[in-house]
Length: 157
Image (cartoon, rainbow, N blue to C red; front, side, top):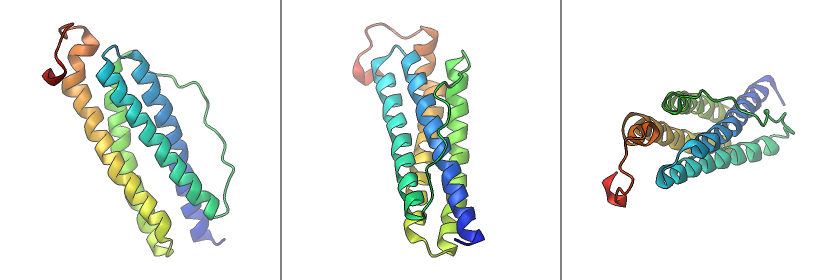
């Protein structure tokens, strides 16, 4: 495997680690939320991160790379849930940009499968970023601060 392939593998491995950490962060954030709908949505976003990690691991295996060091189980979160949601939203936006760069690198190396995985993950990271920032700025604010009505109808959010 040449230096260019090594660079691609390193980028995929870094993305894999980031997705594993994001999945853990999203799960930890979900455990803080009392609103079942918001908690469920955060768990779905965590599942997307795990799916991204799985795709990346498959590409790394196809490139003959792995096993990868596993990030620590314990993830430290700020006590301010809204701040953490904003941080994770910004991180998802940055991840989307990194996926775009990695997809281009994969295309340069004629690795269309890796490019496809990166483009798919990029699109989903953009969506995750928008959703997290929306939760932090609008829908979740009252839930976290305790201002939400206790008997809000499902269509009220």
